[in-house]
Image (tube, rainbow, N blue to C red; front, side, top):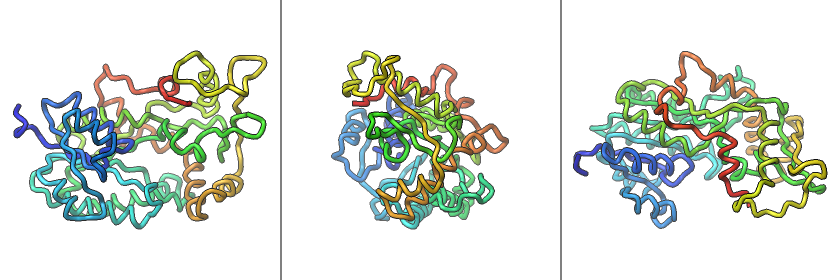
Length: 339
């Protein structure tokens, strides 16, 4: 199949946590079927240059400027897009950006697949308990807008990607264990240590998107849930703590808090109240965001309900190749650079 006859897949947010592995996976595994246009705000970023070296067409555009974004979407057979609340921490901005993408996508004459990386509506999944999970609420509003374009909605597949393993590092102050004054790593959360949180590596988004594209219309109107495992938080913390002292070139951090009784570093889970959690968050962010983050963390307790097997959801395990192994927490901990 020549380059001109390959189907064009446009990846928005192509250097992000989901967009980058999606673009990379398609290039490396489906180049015979698809050609990838990677859309980024900065084509000089290292990730942009890596995608270009692999063979992607890299173009600059963002969600705030309609004309460059329309040009980036032109000719698309398929579009993968995700909005990023955390970029500006603004519900209104995220919704405005998502609505623009929906509008432009609805005008594409040859579009056959619209893949929206979304999130469940926290207000509905918890019977109204949490009203302020702004990243979830924004994506719910974008979803509602999407369905005002019936033809676009008819070719849409949503993906719910579970809690990223990578959040432990990227958003360590919120989601990861922090060292206290005694050298103990403490994971403080507003839920019990036995809570099972559906989790995954964002890197596995690529194989899911590829599987959706290869299936044609099979997953139109469906929501695919990507969750590699659902382990108790106390077990995840213990695995991390034990792994941190095993011989490995990537674990270069001084181990100043070794236990005397074993080889693990000292790490504990501490359940705190929502009020305590919000107070801690308020020390480093605006109050509205501290409320949103605390409710998000509280909502993780209900994750198995949200990402469980129901008639409305399709598990990623059921659509990816049987030979593909979704990354486990143990795999991630072994591979990550914790230095």
